[in-house]
Picture 1: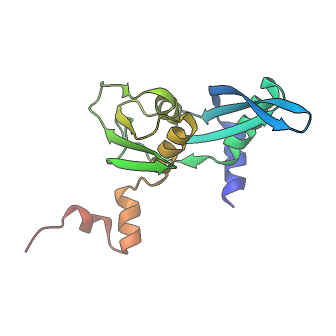
Picture 2 (picture 1 turned 135 degrees about the vertical axis):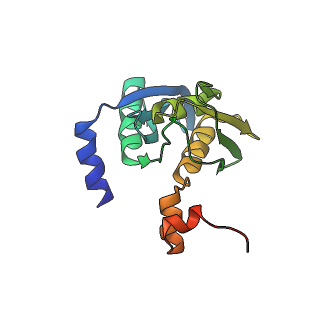
Length: 175
């Protein structure tokens, strides 16, 4: 069911694609070396939907097309606040890469580097602070951001998971 909704939204919204990295990779085979290209792409609509994809092909254009198709298959929706930020601080992990993402004050902009910055900008986040830890691998850092954004929770979702009224979350006091 989720995939049907994504396909319908795909036609209604304007998707922006950005190539994060294109690498020439070689595979050693019996006759010598076989060259191919690997493209890492980020697709987003700047309204809270984002996807990261990888494509491999013998030419760059084919790799980019495959990367776009892969990114659109793995779209996620994220909750954005009124200040175009995220609801709370969160950490994402993918492989050896670890990314910490914190909401920031209005007007501070996107303070992040590399593929993390690209993912956050295409998600529509305007005020955020991010830090890459451990690994400098472009793909793993992009996937770590996606992991973090996928685990974001709103007050409404937290109240639903706990099976309580949302007003009760706001009015919790120590007695």
